[in-house]
Length: 223
Image 1 (cartoon, one colour):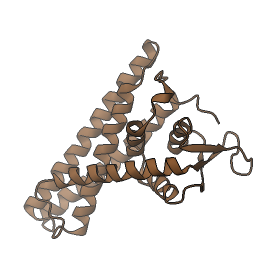
Image 2 (cartoon, rainbow, N blue to C red; image 1 turned 135 degrees about the horizontal axis):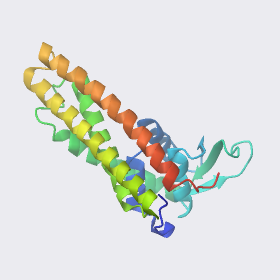
Image 3 (cartoon, rainbow, N blue to C red; image 1 turned 45 degrees about the horizontal axis):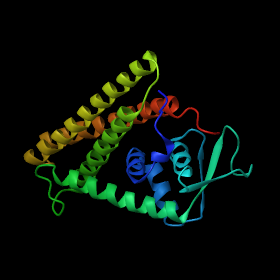
Image 4 (cartoon, helix red, strand yellow; image 1 turned 90 degrees about the vertical axis):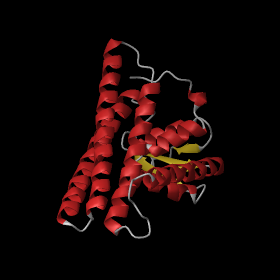
């Protein structure tokens, strides 16, 4: 499902979408790098960050390092985040945090001051996963697959992402019901357990599907 869009179109909106699809671990790498412009960051070839940083390189936000000690062909890729790139990443990370906060704030019955730590943590996960899945779906919809087979796979990806989004939404409903029953009650605890399991499964599925999409869409990234 090769993306035929113009690479020059990569800008703040695309950066926000790509950052929002990252796992918490990958996101933290970008956050740390943005705090230290000019520092070197490394990742596995064709990983989520490799795909992102390769796109950012096209607009001068990263610079690829070819030193064999840091970039091992077919194994690792290393980049430097430029000052302009650090500013862009910092701005978009703040925007993402604001959106997640707004989404979490819409969970009925959640009180950030009195809710138990477990409930607050699960609400944060729901917000982050919902945004990750939505942004991943947006990137998939905007891809321009060539050929019937690639288009069929695109439809398969989008269907899978819709199912993941439904799972995340269901977990959010379980949390709301747990709050209503009392998170420490037997019913509340059961609902929170089900929510935890559902979110874990959704995260695994999203990671797997994102990797499949990345392999097909950006399989021609330099290695």
